[in-house]
Length: 174
Image 1 (cartoon, rainbow, N blue to C red):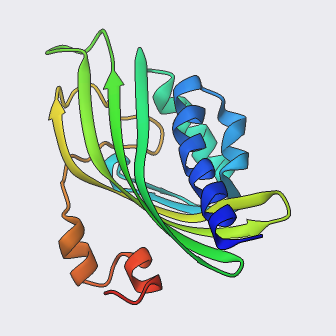
Image 2 (image 1 turned 90 degrees about the vertical axis):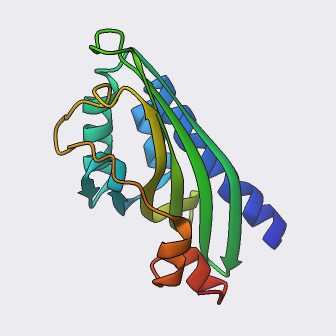
């Protein structure tokens, strides 16, 4: 398989994440993450150490919302054999009609992913998600099992300069 084919499959895997969440097709997360995936979601204020834990927590949180849309864009992918790193921007619209103060919250941030090639295709083995900015009603993302929403924002620049972004480490551009 060519590097371009690998990149295309990796981007498909990353994009499937938003589709899985927004359609509540929780079993699709098995096609995105490894069984033992490590997921550090700063905006959710939580870290999960398996796809099963992630599925449970995401279902618990997202099914309390009226609607939501996760947009993945601008993925930069570095492939090194059977491992890869990707940096992807994300926009998250969360809606809760019953929220006092307005129904919508919009967050923007990035995902720093480590992926591995498996016999079933590319899977995310580690994901770090950080919030860059947000607007709207901060009461929309209510606490749920293992999740305590955090509105702290981060700059990609400071994380890169501190050597915290694995994508930049993989391409040798700390």
